Image (cartoon, rainbow, N blue to C red):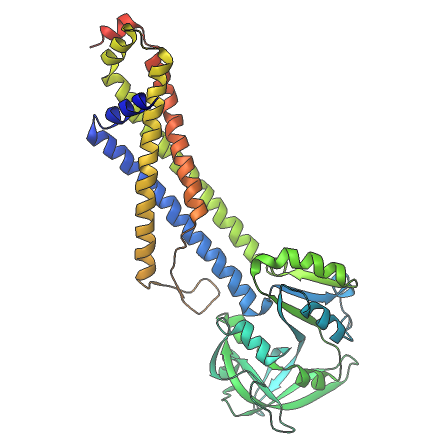
Length: 408
């Protein structure tokens, strides 16, 4: 077998220019697929982490009735007596930390202008651990990060809202909201920070206050939900299963069900990548098939001679399959090397991409070297090149000896 493989190597490099062109074509297709897959993986990871680190967390916990019913008033289906629940979740081995949240809305005023706001009661230190990289503080700090003076309540607002109110860090603003009992209540807060999420619609409306401040404004001891942050994103499904069993009466919702936009983007990119993959398979198939067919035509007399001296037809067939395997193997090796070079080059150039639709912050371009994808694409490349050799190999092995020897 080694003798025939060595013969295949000689045959492949008999016409060096044609072989080089074929291997180059296949290698370029290989690099295109790997780079596209690496960029797609980077986008998926970045999008996933931006949702999680942007405030969604890995898992959110709600009262069961909240998931099945529409609230008629604020916090109708909020979580009460939540401390035991928080402790049970914190005891789970995959959980990094748990934080409480209250969602509310109302009016915010600087005494001259009044705007509608969407409020969030938070645990500032935990929120800053989750959101440092994706909720950027333009000025100041999260409310409650530093010790509040007695009787002083703090808050941070979105950049767009701060601009519309002409508010600066250190100013005092008034929050007006409606309690679960239907009573209007107002408090004054000291503006400690201005943040941006990169999404103008959020920045124009968002207000963050300490959860105790939100409970004081709303006259309640309830919370809207809990946010669970895990050690690793890959632990999400496993953690939900065990946490749900331990805590009946509550719904544990994974981050990807809270962000349907992520699923839409993933589906769109995968369809595009699938089309690219099919195109590249056809390119490889045609390039390899053309090379092998031309090889058969050029070596027709040689094949006839081999058949006339008793070489089995299956050996002729197998020899051409070996040639296809060799072309695919060389193209995969060269393509892998070029792919790593392109990935290293792009990642080292510090290219900045423009903000995606609906956002204001640019992001760095990066390509992930997905080793499993490289292995799969290498296997497919070799397999397709061997497949492209089947028909030319069949024709070569079934030539008539007389016709082959007389071929001009």
